[in-house]
Length: 160
Image (cartoon, rainbow, N blue to C red; front, side, top):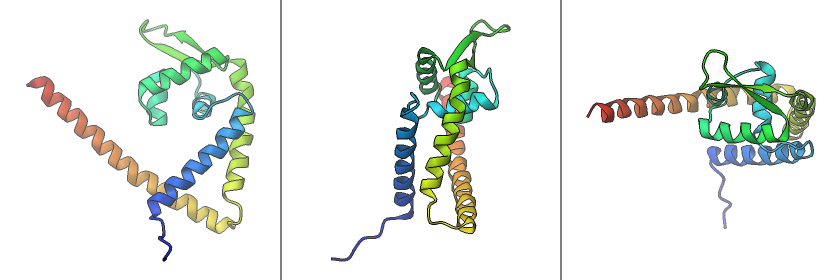
């Protein structure tokens, strides 16, 4: 029986899932769950963002980010503060434990990347990075188009 070769998108999906699993195991050793590192690193880059800003930056829906922020707050990694200009808005800041976790996250990311890229020379790694960037751009364009279509449909429904 001939071996059926996986489609490129299935291989990409499989590689992403395995990468995420390997990273999640490393992060769990530091008390972090998958996805939490993205919020901590986004706050390390720019502290004091709103949940909406974080959701937009990370490409997730606000309810998802809110749940993760609340869990990080309970764990002591972040703190929320009410906005000085808009009482309805909160800003999220790294707590001391969150700042301490940055180095562990960076090490976990580096180890996972090293494992994933094992056996690829520098040229292949650079090519892979470029190709993945192109895939991200291609798929981001689709997501943005769909969001625009949804917004237009919502305006039409509201007007009707």
